[in-house]
Each structure stands twice: as C-alpha cells, then as structure tokens.
Length: 231
Picture (tube, rainbow, N blue to C red):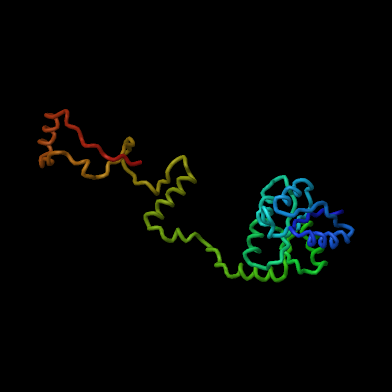
C-alpha cells in the first residue's frame, strides 16, 4: 500500500530535499506541496493525503494553525507530522495540542523521517527522542489528580445530611425514606413562614388568648403581614 504525503514548507529547497528522500521509497508518494499554511490546508482538502509534513514558521498562516484547522475538519483523516528547525518547548506542546501526530527536527537523519511517516500513517504517534524526554519530564512535574472530590470535605454536617437526603430521595422517588421524616399528624402542605420583622403585627400581642381572639373578631379586616414563601 502506498502512503500519500503533502509537503508544507516555505523554502522550495527544503521541499525538494524532502521529496527526494520520500520518493526514494517504494511505498511513499508525494502528492502535493504547499509554501504557506493556507496552501497546506487547501492541498490537504484536495488530495486527502495520509500524512502532512508541516513546517511551523510559514507566511499567511503558520503550521500550528494549519495543523489545528486540519484536525478540526471532520472530513479530513490526514495526520500531521510537524517538522521544524526549532526545538522549543512551546512549539512542541502547542503542536500536540493542535492535534499533531508527530514532531521531528529537520536535522533528523533521512531514515528517521521515513520511519516517522510510516509510523504516523499507521495511526501511531512519534516524537523526536529529545522531545519525548521533555514531554515525559513535563508530565512528571504535574501534581497527581485527587482521588476524591476535595469539596466534599468542606461540607458541614448539616450540608452533608441534606446531600444524603437528596441522594436517597433520588434513588426512591416514589416516597421519602421513613427515617428522614419526623412522624406526626398529617396536614396539608403549606408555605413556611420564617420569623422576620415583616411578619410582626402592628400592635403588641395580647397576653390573654380570649382577648386576642375578641380583638381579631372585632377587626375582621385586619390581616397578617406577608411572610416569605420557602419551598
């Protein structure tokens, strides 16, 4: 099976050298060339190559943005190998975030380039040895993810109890668990009034229940102050 390749580099001499290396192999074929990022995306759409060898520093659109656009198009199955002169960490990690499947330096030997194209075309990922070491070192320095949600430890006892009630009610939505509700005489559900200054009457409460009842009967238009509705 022949592996199709698109070359993207702003230097014609570099593209010519890459073509010579690749086409010396029976299973590799260069189907297109691009001198900038916009052309690289267009050539990839046109030829649908197996692999794109992408330079980073190019006019109009750099190779990182071109790699990102190729990866974002669902109709494109091409895999990108970033090939650059600059061994910079920001280039390495940005290329990987953009979706590149490989990262090689231009001073790599020809056989390593050929091997990278075959490996990436097969669906694997390949990084230059020095790049691999830095990626592993960067990953090793990251803190280990927590084994449990640290936010749960900050809940108060009452908040934890409410959370447990919600979880139990969700598991048995037909009726509330008997252990979570106090037993008592049934009564219709009504709004809950929380004590506040808005709920206070204009006059002081009478110490005699009989007198208070008489006062209410004598003033039928007198109404309780509004209360806040909860639940």
